[in-house]
Amino acid sequence: MMEGGKKEEAGPSHGGLNVNEEKRSEEDDEHHQDPVDITTSYVPGPLLSLKDQIEKDKEDESLRRWKEKLLGCLESDLNGQMEPEVKFHSVGILSSDFGEINTPLPIKEESKSVLFTLREGSEYRLKLTFSVLHNIVSGLSYTNTVWKAGLQIDQSKGMLGTFAPQREPYIHMLEEEIIPSGALARGTYTAKLKFVDDDKRCHLELNYLFEISKGR
Image 1: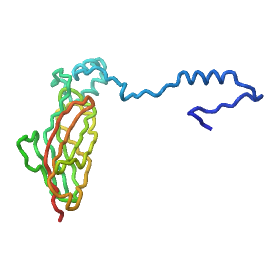
Image 2: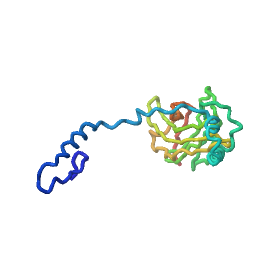
Image 3: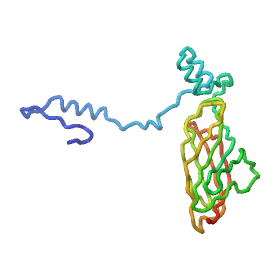
Image 4: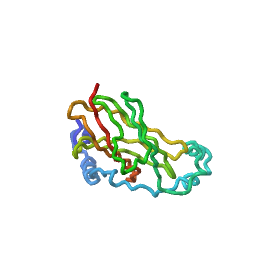
């Protein structure tokens, strides 16, 4: 039987005391410590520019070719900047109601118009188009918070992933969601879509309005 995470060992066949057993027990107690929380003790290494990372392994031909393939042969475009930059080009919405609508970014702050209108009960997905510049962005994630009449009613979070610089923009689809139904669900909502990476850099904070209308 297992007890305290240790396997019970059989004693000597003559029933006497195993002289090493007590010593092992004392050593186990002496060395037993609470597990270390690696999430809080982890210290990231120094940030290197992508150009330095490539030059660091330039003698390794296979690794160099792999990096060139990963980066889309962007070595000539790299400027030594260490901080990655994510440039968002547009945010779109795909729905069975109307197909696809894309809005160029950035949206003018003074614009208070509704970004899109969805019918209650419909399904939709947000579509993002963005570029990554200068360096690899690690752990890019998003938070989408929604309010109605000043009260927060929903917040969704998700991970986009890690992206290397490349010439062609990335296109990423967020998870599909279903619009709630009913009279209380209809109306105009305010929302904030925010993107941060593992180093807590905020790459975009988009405030927008959307509307839920009555179904067919």
